[in-house]
Image (cartoon, rainbow, N blue to C red):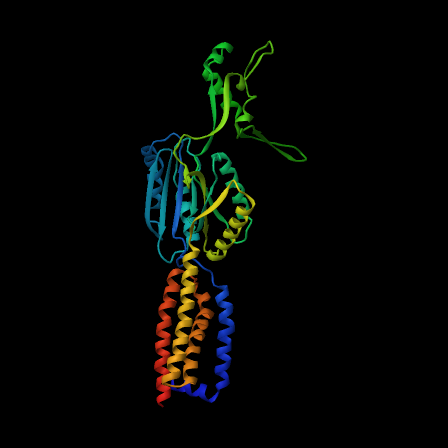
Length: 409
């Protein structure tokens, strides 16, 4: 340390170069740092999603889950396996050990699942995927006085498309409404009048509402894919469905014996904001996205939207960026206050020149940290900001001790 100090005393230009370098590269590094509410962590979980329509939880457990768990036993790199079996579905969560490559382990888990010899008939293909680490950024409610839920959902989908077009925003979830379904209310009197049974109506709907592939036809010139695409997604598309036709030319359509309409499922999935029906929109950030910039873009969009429309309003429910901004302001205020106190009191009791260099060392130390922070995946988060606030006092204290020692000598 003595030789280093001696070198800087002899060649004071080197000190100026280092300080200027810290200032320039520190400012660039600070602007390049990403922000997140908590420190970034890589995902260590792999999910296996099971869909088995019509099966009980016991059938899902015995027919699928236990077979997969047996193949996962002893797999190197797996820390723990947990599973949940429900009616019609199930999930298996595979936690990998620390230090293991998540992408390599994903392939190992897929191979283990593929080694299962048989699965129950009627089960849909398994989905093996890596659970990405995401964190909530901002959430807002879409509401309006006396506006139907279907309209709010339509507005929410349009807002989702607008937000996805923004750079740095990819994870958007819309909730607050039940699943949509098509209701076919069959009139018993009309069935008796036309001599049709309920089973005939059900079979006509299931046989006509299809989306299947029928193979392909190869020719010398090209290959043709045969596909039946007759699936209806809205009620009015089923009104003209032919239920029965006789040789005399009489055609009975679905609208003749039933009322077909779009509706929401009978579930209590509904949210309210200020006493009105609402749809919730939640934006989350991945490890590659910046929390503060994403939140700022969303808040600008909300402000523009509320200026354009009066009947539908967007209200922010949760904003994680507020805490980060407040802590950043606290850090800045503490740093400025510490520098001013050092300048005033050291100038009074020691020397104005020494007071200046002690105060000047505070921003230089932080800029030096910002130069190297990006290389260690440090982000602007609540924990790192708290650490910086604590460090301000330590830096000022150390600077005063060193300045006092210099003044003494």
